[in-house]
Image (tube, rainbow, N blue to C red):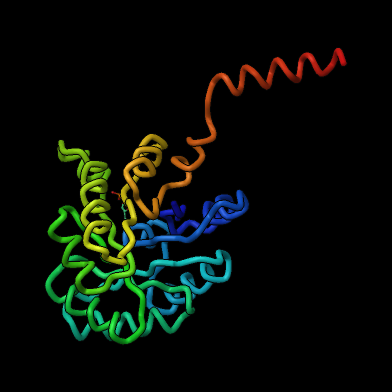
Amino acid sequence: MKFFIDTANLAQIKEANELGILDGVTTNPSLMAKEGIKGTEAIMNHYKTICEMVDGDISAEVIATDFNGIVEEGKKLAAIHPNIVVKVPMIKDGIKAIKWFTDNGIRTNCTLVFSAGQAILCAKAGATYVSPFIGRIDDSGWDGVQLIEQIAHIYAIQGFKTQVLAASIRNANHIIRCAEVGAHVCTCPLDSIMGLLKHPLTDIGLAKFLEDAKKM
Ligand code: G3P
């Protein structure tokens, strides 16, 4: 399973990248706004900086919601760097645009996916990644990981090439459960990735080893 970090914060991207386990970055308009990135030039420069920091797929999201607008914006984003993956919302014109990008050699990540039906459409259009938002599904009282399992199963038996990218991860347990059910990628906030490191018995064991090492 690939690990992406879900942030536009350069310090967090750097910290995760230095662990040596990072395979890519996902962003969205909310994450970019949180970092105070405003205006086309600043947005483009920010994506370029991320591409230069991390050797992996970098998702950059379009703002347009009509076919022509999505295609024009996506072409500009894809021209920033070969590692850019154009992130497109799960809407009718989004699916049409994903098919256009697929036919024209531009990789895509279909975002805001909340059902298996939507995931089938993404795969039919040739999306590189499908992004089901599991935390938001949990928030609405359903089981997000179950959707990841269902989509992974459908893609496997149908031979779809689209990779299942579990998004809206809230904690380390989400990452473990997504790995169990066959997600190809998890995009996670830094604290969820760091949460995988933690176990109280590791801390207790290390403290004892360090204490005993003084007697060696
Ligand atoms: O990048 C999309 C997704 O991961 C958003 O997560 O926490 O806003 O539901 P969240």
